[in-house]
Length: 456
Image (cartoon, rainbow, N blue to C red; front, top):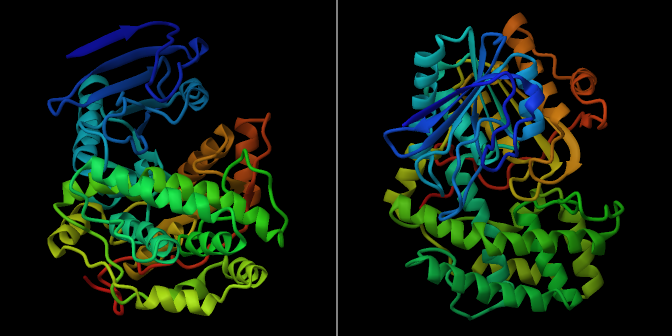
């Protein structure tokens, strides 16, 4: 099924994105359905500049609406169409941890675009959040289809690392706040079991937030996932030594982690992998906390509460561990882990205060790309601000044009001054916030392939 509309000015709905402004002067809008069942959307301006942008959208939970989306938001789409870019993207055939559907659906959408409009002068893959995982998969495994890629707030640590580091905070919360209680953290029979476990642990965490000792333990769990103390634009920014304020903000993010990713989303991913793909056998939580940028906060809150951090870490390190199903790990590695083997330039951008996909994910991918000899093709830039994917339109477009500059010249120029200048040209209403920044190491080993990794 395909619908084609030619208009001098078009307003359309892009699912999670709002309507593209009429003044974008879209010459062609094409939508339809792929054989997989995924829908797709394409927007091509009257004066196409020859570049097509294949957008990969973020994670959508099982059962959520699943429309096709070809840009991050309406404002960004309008600017890009006005500048001559063609925008395309699919819904993916399924929701959830859908990488095995997303990648072929995105490639099929690109094939249809080529058949409809001709071969692009340049094709760029870009995406946000989970779409950053899809984008990086396209870049590593289908490099012949793209000139470059842009991952924004991306899950570039890959699936194995993501699910392992999602396990660590809930393991700490259960061990320290619900000792002896049978609250499953993996291996859920179905969504009902996952939701029930989430509710049971959430009630313990909610009660713990009422005491100084409980708050110290919640901060410890947050530190194991590197959840920053300012992780939402709606939060009040605490001072550098306002440990209580930082923990209040982390508590909100931890509560969100419990409600969806750590239980409900995990169960959906486990159903695809065929078992538990996470483990903490061999993990030293004392060492992990020592590497965390939040170490000082945790030690101060424990001191204020009069609780022994050493005792709690010892309890974590002797608690019965969770083992993975090797077949499930193999499935996750085969579908959702990166080797860092880039053939074309990739630019990653990330906010420093991301509580859902912490900025340390970029350290994981830098490690992989360096080990694979692709370090010169990867550049990473950081926006100083709280929130997941909380970029301005100018910051995203500034990053896109910086990637294009690399493709045109063969040289990276990702200095904050240059990125901020490009962002300001695209959006004069919002201050650009790129800064010099280097994230801490990722809290868990990136992949099973590295010596010394804990193995299931």
